[in-house]
Image (cartoon, rainbow, N blue to C red; front, side, top):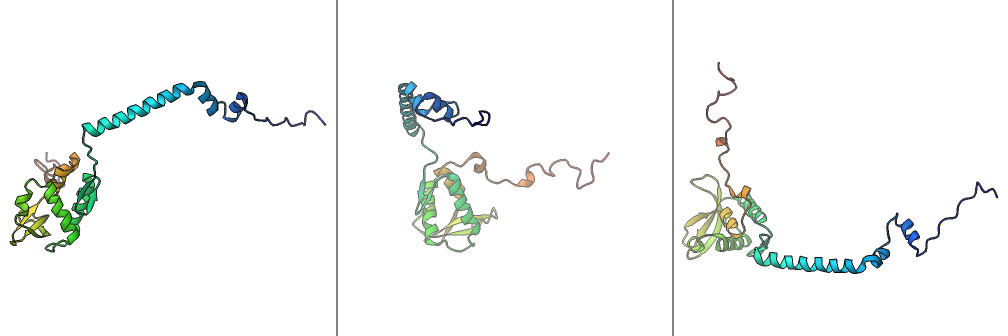
Length: 197
């Protein structure tokens, strides 16, 4: 055999450190790392675990979590935004002057009881049903309580939701008239005429 054409034998890996270094791309094997500094790692891991558990206990006791789940009748909500979206969609997709079904009735009744500032005043002697109607003053859809004596009263689901779980600041402001936000307001030059000189 020609020595130039001989292929060098493949390295045989054993439990030596060199074999571990070659196999792991130059780094120490896990066993080697554990043997070298095992006690200090265990102590640091225990300290981290103890502090993280302590931190969790402190956080739970000091500040009430905003992400608590809220149950309104049979429905459960994970956040104020989820609750807001549910009632917003219900308001805008339900037909006007039609009583809501029993499921939504229970959810809206719990919303009134838990979220309204004066639930006894809104509920009165009893509630016959809930309806979506056009508000006579604001000309927008609104939830109305139909009482047992056939009187009705509107209420703001947004305020009730915000009272139960605070809404984010950008959702807390009611929609304003977009025409008054600076477009074509004040001194202007009219429509497409440009500046007069």
